[in-house]
Image 1 (cartoon, rainbow, N blue to C red):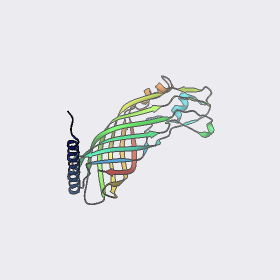
Image 2: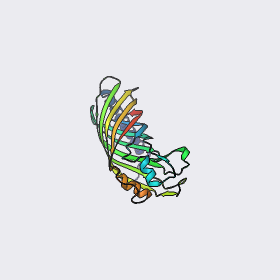
Image 3: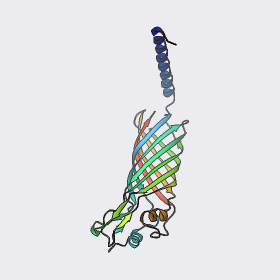
Image 4: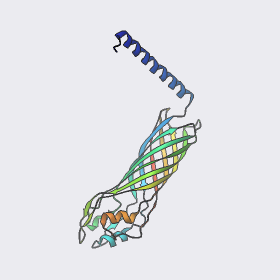
Length: 240
C-alpha cells in the first residue's frame, strides 16, 4: 500500500509533535524531581592488594635467583566506572566496572633480573546503593556490590636467573564483593565530582592454583584462597 505525500507529511508532523510533547513532559518531571534517574561515574582508582602470603622470600625460593631479586608490589593504578539507576530519592542499583594494571611480581633493579609477566585485573559488580540526598551539594552514599573479578598474567620468560623461568599465560575468574561508599559534590544540575569512594574489596582467588598454573605445579603452597583488598576511587559523575 502506498501513502500519498500529503499523508506522509501528516505522519511526520504527528511524530514530531509526539516527540516534542514527550520531551516537555520529561523536562517537567525532571524539574519537579531533583533526583537524577540515571547517573554515570568514571574516574581513577588505586587498588591496594592483599598478597595472600606471597612475599619476596616465597618468590626467591620458588624461582631461585642467584641473590635476593624479587619483591611484591601491593598498589596498582587503574580505573573505575559505574552506571546507576535511582528508583527513588534514597535507593538505587549500580553496575560497577573496574580495571587495574601492574605485575604482582617485582624485581630489584640491581639484581639484573627482567621479564616478569605483566598483570591485569578486571571486574564487573552490581548491587544496591543507598544515598542520603538533601538540599546540600554534598551527597554521601553507601553500596554493596557483588560479582566477578578476572585476574591475568601474561606469558613471559624471566631472565637474569641461573636458569631462565618461563611463565605461561594464566587467567582466573573468582567471586568478588565490594562494600563501601563515598561522597559526591554537586557542581551543576548535570555534573558532580566524586571526591572519594572507598571499598573493602574481597576476592576469592586461589593463589596456589594461580601461580602454579603460571610457573609449574608444586612451586607455590600455603598461599591464601581469598584476599582482603582495598579500592580507592575518585572522578566525575554525570547526572541525567
